[in-house]
Image (cartoon, rainbow, N blue to C red; front, side, top):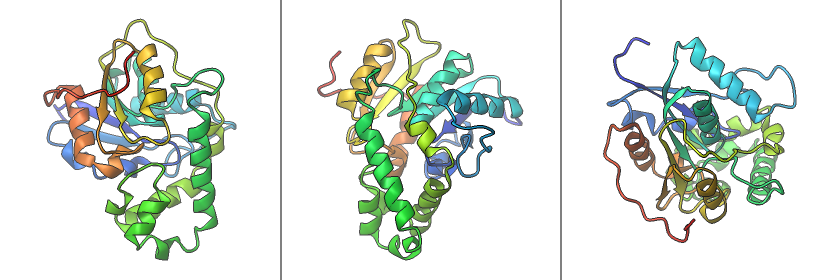
Length: 267
């Protein structure tokens, strides 16, 4: 890999791409070699060979990407679907540590904790597709950026118009959105963790709320470190890249952990 520093591999959420991490990466590079990957079926990632695509397929493809880069084991961090991927890769022995930011996959067999978030993501995807022709002009407005991404971020106005347009294009060109939103897969309970895992939940997550999905996650991974990230939405890389980087670095051991309150989330 050409570096003596340990690697951190970053995984994005559904419909997004490696560019979701662009504002976080500069805060990590002093401590780690950083590799941001784009998932199977997403814009810029490997094409899906067959449909429908499952989360297992996405994880299989991510593992092949690690193999292709000569990475046996690394610190893994991911948001939403990416957090789920990181946890699954850890179960395969590929992680030195995992920082999962509002990870998907923590819902029950009846869809509790999944349905409302899926509905919001589908609504956002429909709106983006219907308005794609006017987006280059519309996203010049900070208020439009903030309003159009309100379900996934609190401060999307801090994105540049170019970043907002790129995120919209990622969504439009994601080939596997419906496959993954319709999945019945989930993360199984773990009596023992395969490596240190931090579950870092966004305090203002409107897609996978901490009070529902975070609670399920704590029950299924009781040995994981759980913390609440203040003032951020489901995709915290948009709202506070420095906070996200600090959370990842605390998990890898490059920075000290800081106590975090967990309001209303008792086991």
